[in-house]
Image (tube, rainbow over all chains, first blue to last red; front, side, top):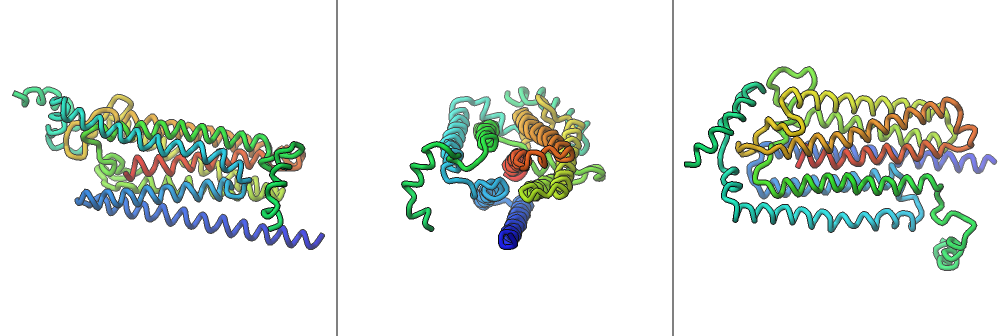
Length: 151
Length: 228
């Protein structure tokens, strides 16, 4: 009786240590993400920006792994159960790749064959003012100004 | 060790009937499959956001859009501040949920009640933050079909940005809301000794799975909308 009791206690201690560890990991990853986010605000180099974004995505996936594996306890489930959940989710690999590729291709096609679409991306709206009231005005002014600029 | 060396006969027996091959309760397995399907729903939303963003020349700068917080002075520029508070609220409420599940496994009713209350408070705090942010954006003229923000390069923006933002955070907020309702029901059932009578706190585990999923989705929504 006392043996099983200490066993239980040891197991409890282990579980609590795991919860603590995962909490710290999730917090640290989030803080790193935020630091990278702040750093990115003043960044001008597009290549560096892309690298930082990639890092943030990797951190996001790591956080997702820790939540699912430890908080949702999936790691301690039977392997067959894990597989029935993880294998269907692999569809996302195709899903994300195919659709982002498609979106990108659509933009390129429109830039090549739709002059209006391309031109829209070059017409700057006048410098926006502080306060939201003026912002609205600038927006509506743009609607009338843009066609005039064309000829 | 011995189980791994004699894996194949054990496996045959595992599916031979008479015991649960997944060593898990039916409701819990079904909760997992529900969450998997829900992951595809959220995935479809977020991927369509990505597709539209990739097919558009300009896009608003999230650091310009989400730059305020409650009681902030007019014209404040504090990107990422408020959303990081929201993120930590959700992470902490996820931790208290784990602690509630853990207490339930030990048949510790007091621990379950205490941690469930903290989880519910966390959920309500998150919802309040989101309500404030929606209200703030709405007061700036942002809503479905209305986008007062310009693209990062100063060109005119379409309404895609606000449409996706309100749809996806709204759908997530609805999940948080239903999670809070589920947690309140679990708390009431715990207080009524329902789980003590059943002899197990498996329902807390299932509610916990849902709550962690809500946190998991926020990890993606937060990163995609506010950081990328």
